[in-house]
Length: 226
Image 1 (spheres, one colour):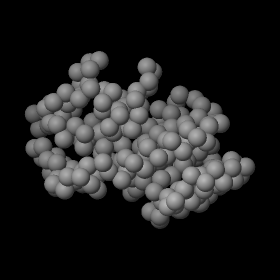
Image 2: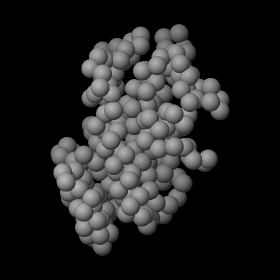
Image 3: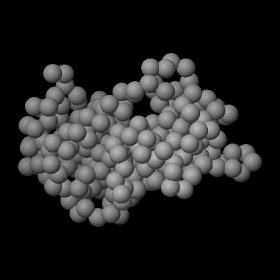
């Protein structure tokens, strides 16, 4: 079984030990950092396929780590929080987290979420040509995007949402279909994760020169790029 290098940034030593043993049996190689600054330093090396980040950390909390990290790195990232507060989840998604789990979490669910993140990060499109609509261009393999000649700093999830929309420009894409393709999961009845990622993506894309939204929302149905 091949190993996937993962980084966990969490000051709970017992949890780190448990996850190290559990994930090793599932084909993951885990490295641990126990405070915000050292975790950020390790994450910036680019050596990891995914990152697990706790909200409550000494030295620098998880949201600060995430905010700083997303300025230069789009490694798939899953946040954990013992508090389980909705505001933590919302802030994490706004700052660029790809997924979120409350603590304590079932290790089996964590593994399933990690595998979904890795499948998405490896890319599901075999196309080599860039996707381009007007002044917006996205490489479907690397998930790098440009608006005109300016690179866009998108998270992996934002880029996957954009890729799904650009593959069918002008066509309405159902919310559930978009969530399954881009987030790797169906939407629950109170799940706002797609909305949060979409809000962040719209903010980064801005408006067309004539003031129109680039991504149109059809209430209760889905989204389209026009």
